[in-house]
Image (cartoon, rainbow, N blue to C red; front, side, top):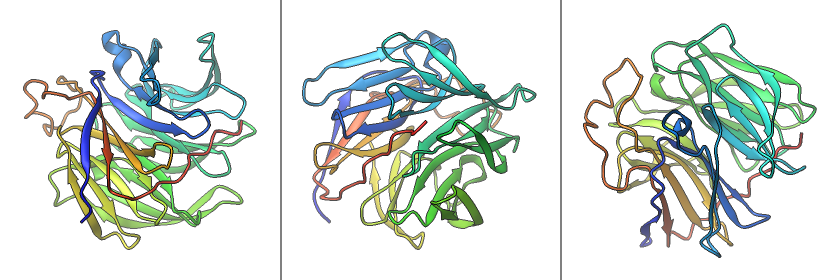
Length: 305
């Protein structure tokens, strides 16, 4: 196996680092601190590897995911719905609210397909019940329900040929594959891609590389796993902290891997999988970078709405 190096890129002490996005246009990494606002921390972050500059923006609510917009700014999956965000002014514009009748549900992980549609799904804040749905926000700002019965949405991503959509329900301990129609944004024929039931970790955020292998960050175990297109494990990388949350390719050649993590100890979940975290690990909540693998990712598409 090719030698690789893991560096702690930024000690940002994120309460719940998530949703890394590498923007090929400005050569910067964006990500969110999903529950940072609960403890007074910034919600949106940007890092420029070329200058070392770090910027962040505060919100007054949880943010599950973000994607940059073609028209500037970002689209956000906040706790109660989909919003457009202006980095310059901090203005939020509500596009659509979801699950107003489910008080313990909030939107979680999300990503854009290669036609600029934004997908994001919900999670039960107690990580117990299949209360939530997976949504697709189209470029005309219309909202469509893709799937239901989800406990905790994570890891949406697509195969390089756009024919397979991957998605994880973290606490059902499953990663699914769907047939995907890039022309319509439709997902069908859901099937098991990989199970984490026998693993020490749970599937969190994902991305796909240029060779069509799917990468998943396993929260709790700290394992970064590369799955082959048939669902078999091709590579496993142990990260310096256990609660890694998501993964993204970046850098000028898209051959660097960025991994987010979380620092929080208290957890609203009813299960006890986080009980071993009696105190924060050293470096938990940091952003990490892996170099030297020689594997390249694919550019992320901006939201077209």
